[in-house]
Image (cartoon, rainbow, N blue to C red; front, side):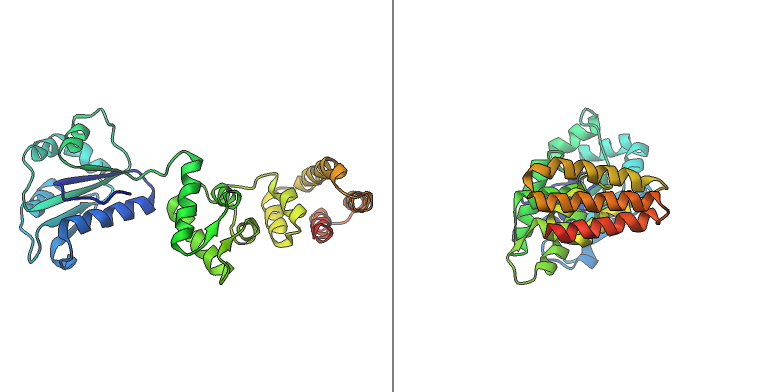
Length: 289
């Protein structure tokens, strides 16, 4: 993230709250420096009228080199006053800078091209390339004096989704959880992070293989959303046991299949299916340790 310099207009486009906050802070610092922000920063809501914005932009700041005028969620404002803004940008104020925060703006529009010519455009959308996001995760962990390997970073991204603010919050939690350890591991992510993007059908067998009871039950609860889901989960576990049969000792694989058969019989003979499947998952996790 390159350091911003003083410009008459900054366009922050995109919905990632972390990037919005970071670029907004950089822009304000570039405009007012170390001056008292209460005296030289004006913040306007989306329902602001053009005359109020222009009055602020033409008013010299008190005890500061320039005034920063911020307009949050400005999409509707730009639509309503597009031509007036284009006229203003032709001769912008010499005593203030405007920070426009929008969800989107088409690059082919006249106003976008004018802003690109005289101001700074900051992309506040989370990168679409997962490799860039996992790189950002590693950098964020490093700022907290932690390391995180690629596999753990990918799992964190899968659980949280492409939201840098939310990812930063989870990294804070993980850094606190690992304490004096310098590394955030895959098991730490599995234990501490909730899969907010929805359960992945392979998260359950993965947790069972690692012997992570807490994570396995957490994933299981997310998979049991309606009556009958227990049997679908039983089928998934059966598939997974068959898939891993060759990798396990005959004694261990045989014990796992016996537990599976016992759970299947219990569910078909009147035992509460949810209780039966939870008991099976706990038992398999214990065997996997």
